[in-house]
Length: 169
View 1 (cartoon, rainbow, N blue to C red):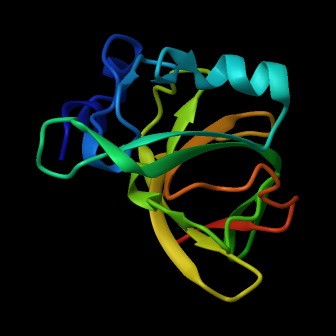
View 2 (cartoon, one colour):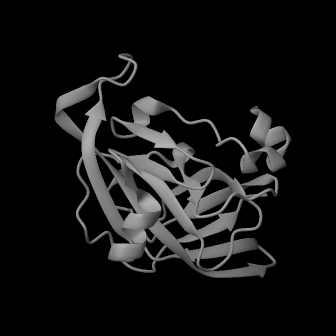
View 3 (tube, rainbow, N blue to C red):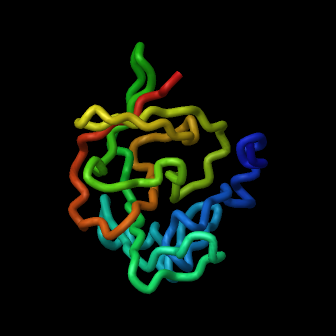
């Protein structure tokens, strides 16, 4: 458990922790953005729209951030399209389909604003029936942006509004 999990108001002053080996080399975080090779993912989404992809050298695991000469890691930025609540939980529709890539779901993070609400367990479902659990702020809403690192190079066309995230409680 981290300080930002216990006291979410701290997210205004410090970013949530991350695992550098899962993100591209030269990635750092602010309270509201992920910056890869000096490219802010918020700015990328503003210029390219969502979903959008930025690929860069992967980190060689266990080297403290040393870039790989051959392997790539991508960051996919996607938007929440719709949010609804039902008897079976809260659902979010995203503007990206990631069923053909390898996202590091445990690194999924909100960008664009610093939420001060507690995180809840969400279940991410896909058309293929594969489900994952992630922790995200409870107050996600349409228009919010999410960033997730993915192994390898991801095609710029990562799909359209087909996935949903459902509250796993």
